[in-house]
Length: 252
Image (cartoon, rainbow, N blue to C red):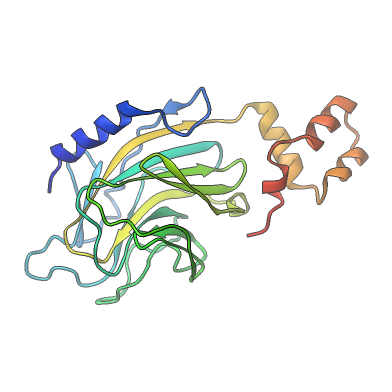
């Protein structure tokens, strides 16, 4: 367990470049949840690092996960996960899930836990993204120690985008605003000695006007329907010009 070395690497990267967030972002301080911790998962004292399958005798006996102590219903959120050891084994994943998403599989069941059902969305180090039990190739596999995976969750647009070493890998999922449950950062692993560290965590929250426009757009089937609403002309124009319209009406 590297602890301090991992934190030094994360701090160094944080200083090198700005996160892919709009101006006005603020830092967040959420940590990994300790109260739902499984025996195959260990947390550092500050709950910023997670260690999987550390028993020297049993090693790995299945799939385990951990979620954050905070979930998100609105706003844009970005966080980074650093791989303190090279990822290996059947599955190591980063993503999000609702409170209903499982944190473990049965004994000696090795699977891609995040995205196994409809309550979670995940990226495997092998380059596939998973949701509702299905997957697709999303990016090239990554095997390097020190890899930094960024997660950009936009609850206003309902989108999830992953980054590798601060470079966007492209849009991964849409329609997450339809879940109507808080989404929690999550990680999972089947591999012994997996070590992951929390890095930068930040967010921006929408203005009241943005929240109103977003709510209206979500409840209209098409842009022209805005003309039928009993609203001032300028508000109807803003609604039809709403930047998030196409994403909000995109299907899962």
